[in-house]
Image 1 (tube, one colour):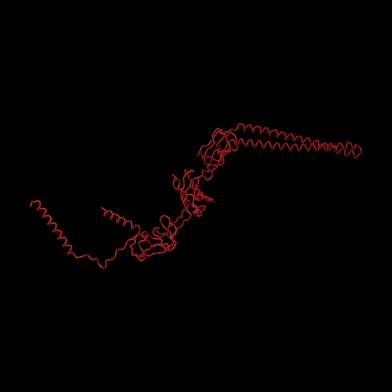
Image 2 (tube, one colour):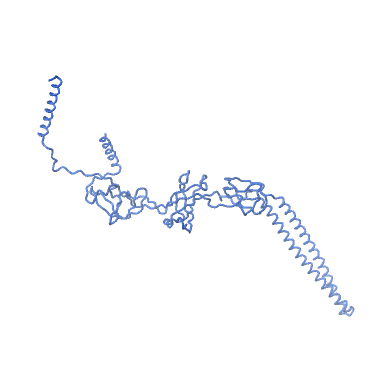
Length: 412
């Protein structure tokens, strides 16, 4: 037998002897029996205290920023060429500011002609007044002649023919006076007509200067220099009255009945963030195709609000303080909703009347009192009478971290 074989044989014998020794010591050790009075391990649960919290019932929406009131600027007179545009998009203008000019050469001529017509009418009135004065003087003379003729006829010194002539002359003078009065009426009517024509001509001349009817911001400019102004096409300008922009949003028909004018709203605007506002108007109609209703929300003034930006957010239709527990603490069974209240380390099932959910909390209408502690989560694993070790959230967090660390260590 070689020296190497002898070494292998001796090594095997040594291993067998060592194994036998370990087995004998194990058999000789007394068995570990748990003590009869050792307490069972109590599971730890996270609990939360019922307390009053603020609850908000929101109605969500989406929509677009639109002008609260958009004013269209059309020419008051048609058929005249645009010679100048004095405003650009985004310009802020005041009411009465000239924003465009129309060709007015012929309008100046119309005013001059109307002024000449009025001057002629004024001269005709003066002439009629002169004729009235002359006719009244002739009538007065004819009346005096008639009175003398009557007196002479009574004394027998005048013939009947002379009296008849005096009577006829008085009647003719009276007719001339009435005709002169009528002539003045006609002349005055012609003067009024001439004045009206002059007023119209002057108004048309003034309308050649197109002015902003309201104060606001120019949102669109369709007019072009050299084009013919007419009210039958697009307006020359569009103005957002007072620059005021609001949100026009859509709300589903099932929530529209909860919305009221004046309710607060938070509008998330693309690129700008949240802007506060209030419901200003609720449309009386719902779109039969989309089943959406339109709501207008007035926004707090802000310079960078622009029509066309996307707007989403919520309307607060109800806001109140009420008793609350974590939403995860409320469970549902066949007989209704319930929570697991923990008192003196023992679980008790309590029926509750839950309400709205807001930011992870559930409103409790009845069944709980302020200060009660409930199982915050994993309540489905417990029932009435179970013993637990309650941990508040601030106590449960370090324990969870320790467990995670232990699991990570065991996995290595």
